[in-house]
Image 1 (cartoon, rainbow, N blue to C red):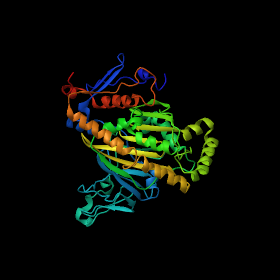
Image 2: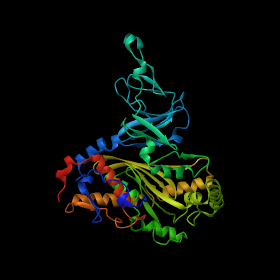
Image 3: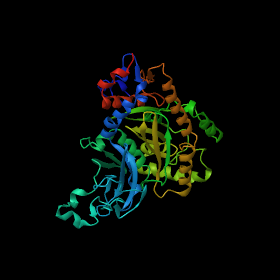
Image 4: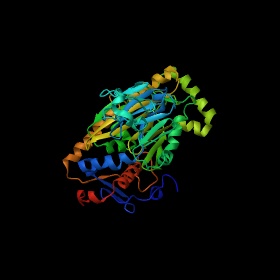
Amino acid sequence: MTLTDESASMPRSPGSPLVDEDDAGYRFRVHRSTMTSPEVFQQELRRVFDHSWLYVGHESEVANPGDYVRRPVGGRNVFMVRGAKSKQVHVFHNTCSHRGAVVCRQKAGNAKVFQCFYHAWTFDSEGKLSGVPDREGYGAGLDFAALGLRSVAKVESYRGFVFASYDPDIVGLVDYLAGAAEYLDLVADSSETGMEVIKGTNEYCISANWKLLAENSVDGYHALPTHDTYFKYLVAKGLVFSGGLEGNAKDLGNGHAVMEYLAPWGRPTAKWGPDFDEDVRTEIDRLRAELIERHGERRGTRIADTNRNMLIYPNLVVNDIMAVTVRTFMPSGPGQMDVTAWQLAVRNEHPSVRQTRLDNFLTFLGPAGFATPDDVEALESCQQGFASGGIEWNDISRGMARDAKANDELQMRVFWRRWAEQMGSSEFTAMVTR
C-alpha cells in the first residue's frame, strides 16, 4: 500500500449523512449544511475541537523562564508560559481559581507572577497559588496546593511545536500526528541552529466557514486560476514556470494531509530563484551545501527544493513554501472565522535571507499580499453561494480514479472523513435532502 492508494489508505468513517462517499462510482460529496448550520457549528466545538490536539504555539515564543503568550485555542482562553523553576512549558486555562477572572491580561511578555486584578490572588509561572490578600480571613482551610491554576488536560511538544488537548483520554501527540510528524521534521531539520517564530502575527477575519480554509490550504487545484496575478508577477521577475504543480498528495492519517511538489520559485531554505535578489544568492547556495552535507543528497535536496502545504487536523496549517508559515483558524460562527499566522524562521539567520523570508511572508501570504486576498474573496464567495440555495452538495471527487496528484482533492477527502467520524450521524439526518 502507498500513501496515495486512497482506496486502501484507511477504513471508512462511520457514515455521517452529511458526507457521502461512493468508491465504486468515484464520487465524494459533502452536504452544504456543514458550512451553514448553527447546529453543526455548535456540535463541532464539542466533538471536534474538544477532542483533538490543537496547536498552541512554538517553544521559541517562550524561550526564557517567565516568558508567556496568551491566545484562544479551540475557542477557549489559555496562556502558555515557561516555568521559572522547572523550565518546562505549561499551558493553563486563563481563569482565576478564586472567582474566575482572567489572570493573564496581556498578549505576551515576561512575568514572575500572574495576579488577578479582581481580588489580587497571585500565581507563579508554575501555576501555583503564591499569594492571597488577608489570608487570615480564610482560617486554616485555605488549601494553596489545590487552588493553583489549572493546566489544560494534555500538553505535549513535538520538535518545538506545542499542542494541547482538552480531552484527558486522547492518544499521545506523536500517535495523533502520525505521518505529519515527518513533515514537521523536514521543517525542523532545515536548520542546524533551530527554528524560531518571528515576533508579530498576521490576524484577520474571513466571512466564511472554517472548513473552507482547511480545504483551501491544501488545494493545488485553485492555485493557477485564483492566483493568476502572482504567477504573472513571478514570470515578470524571470521565473520559468511550466504551468503546473509537479508533485503529489498524501494521506498522513488522522485527518492530516499534505501536498508536496517541486518548488516553482525560490525558497529561503535553501533554493535561490530569480524572484529573489541577487545579493542573497551566495548565502542561500551556502545553506544548500550545508543541508546536503548534513542530511545527504536525497534528503538535503528534498528539504531545499520541494514545497509542502500541510494540514494538521483540524485547524493547523504549515506552509513550507517561499516562507514557512504557521497558521491557525477558529470558527466564531457557522460563517465566520478568525485567522492567525506566524512566520517560522532559522534562528540566527543571515539578515539578507531573513529579509527575503519576511518579504515573501507579506508579499504572497500576508492579508494584503498576492495570495491571501484572493483566497479570502474565493471563500467568502463560496459562503455567499451557499446562501443562494438550489444545490445541496459540494463535489470533492477529483483524483479518486488515479494516484493523487498535488492538484487533486484527496487532501480534502482525508479531512472530511475524519470530520465525519468525529461528528457522527444521527441528529444530522434531517438536514440531508436526497
